Image (cartoon, rainbow, N blue to C red; front, side, top):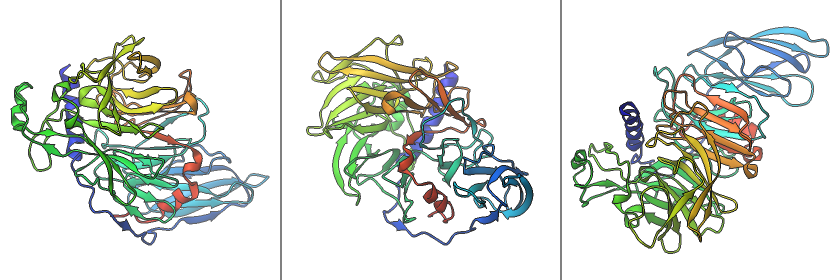
Length: 488
């Protein structure tokens, strides 16, 4: 148990250290001149086979697949393309010089457009991709929060195609926390508009901005978190080590923010949830070197289809709360300890052999009165899993409706996500920091059959993986964004 606790605390401390980091002033960063334009190579006809040396080619060449990567070293790389093309399969060899991030673009006669071979930087995380099924079309937004175990890799936000190939990525030295869609052809890791090339930072109106969530709403607003410190609390009932907090907690403020950065609505956890509801408080060191009690640790927020109810996940309470947008009051609490406020209904978990979930992430509204989440199960030491519950508020119950346990039976020490699509026929689970096993995500169908599996064999840790429909992002715009110098 000690090793689990130490590892969990280490990752929690990393996350907490990032929580108060201000995102900087808003504003747009203009696109810069491309550092290295693509190198154009023409084949004698439509390519039928392609080999790349010395860095190899991923995935294996198929005429129907148009995005590839090859491994590169720092500096100038001499890359040899051996192409079979045309009806007779004539073979031609071409050597080009590429630097990291630059692409070779192979064009040939025939439909389907050119083939892009991206020169991956030397510190890009290794991705192990298996595709035993046929995943529905779409893009995967993800990234690694930490470098590899040996610190040989950097940390990157990335967009992967259905083959697990990075079509777009950005190096983020502080770690890729939450990579999300923020509108058509807009990515949120900061905010990148693929059409204009402009990047901006969106700080929460009430600082400091917390990177766990940026949820795009249909009206154009976004839901965000902040983690201000709040003092004057009696923490004597906690573990004696919390005396170092001197009565100060890390609060959780949920904020709805307009596109121009104005505060639309806010909800403060400390005004509505008793500190006594914490089951796994932590003591992170803040950027100003103070220590504070992290009793809530909000990590996801969602708004229902009516816009009147908000779902807030609090990891350190091992509970999910339903909040009224109109009054701010908590209507019900799912899992965790009984709520301190008698008027708050504590939903009974029904039909779940494990009794409850714990240290969960990514709680979401689902159709038909259901709620989904990723259950880390750190405290209870069961296998991590993706779960969906059918909530009957009138009966005061939440019935387990679907689950997918971690295949090796491992718990997840931190991070992770679960998203459902196609009415439950498509499910993407990021396993977070899996105990003793590589991080990454798995896509399964309704019956749990694996369609796609992407892992980090060198033990980088991912925060979340989100799949969006193919029309959400334009492939040409993603490629064009790679040719622009990233904003500082």
